[in-house]
Amino acid sequence: MNGRRILFVHAHPDDETLTTGGTIARCTADGAEVTVLTCTLGEEGEVIGERWAGLVAGEADQLGGFRILELTRALQALGASGPRFLGGAGRWRDSGMAGTPSARNPRAFVNADPDEAVGALVAAIRELRPHVVVTYDPVGGYGHPDHVQVHRFTTDAVEAAGTDAFPDAGAPWDVAKLYWTVTERSALEAGVAAIAEVPAGWRMPEPGELPTVSDATVTAAVDVAPVLDAKRAAFRAHATQVTIAPSGTEFALSNDVVQPILTVEHYALVRGAAGPVGPDGREKDLFAGIS
Image (cartoon, rainbow, N blue to C red; front, side):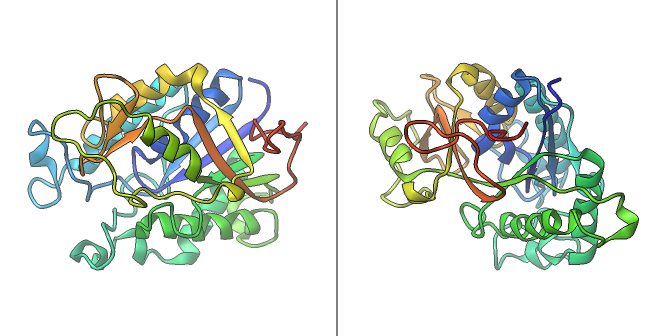
């Protein structure tokens, strides 16, 4: 261990791999202490294939427990420690998409009491003492209500953790840097343009269908090519949610829209001072500037 600590706060199992898996693998390979804190079990997810289809919410409603296993395997592939869940596994339930019956469940994360959820996050931050925290942007990447809620609660918790708020949650701790995980528009467009073959049953994305941010929003670009095998292994661990193309360079979710597996993961620094940058004006390491 090199003494550096980073906390990734995500909404559902597989989110940690889809946008930050390579960064997690890079951080662990470099000796950092990495924690992934997940806020729900992803109970409302759709299932790819027939083998585990009966686990979904409308049938056995056992998908959440199975996704704990998938998350555990994915984190092992990335070299990180085992999963942690906000408030303990199962405290809050996957809300599903806005306007669906699942979002009205009293246990849904969108209905979480803010003081309880933020307090639990503050306690985790004070326990783990991360130098860096990573979460979503204000729209949650693609608008999922749980992602938006994670953004709100994590932002509030990072601000509160270094103050006298929540006195029963441990000693104050100041987080040095807060990042949003984002997808750079030009990088995604280039990746889509490079797709040579679309597997049977999949389709190309429509223009603007995949969520991105403007290139100007990006302040950090982490090269994950050296750990791409670990990132692919983590994708495969989430087999109910993700399928990798035979080429190993693309994947699809349950909507069968093909997407490139990017070799660079992008971030926007929203709290703290940027460290040294590369020729493109972007940080190459989320710990940049932290001694």
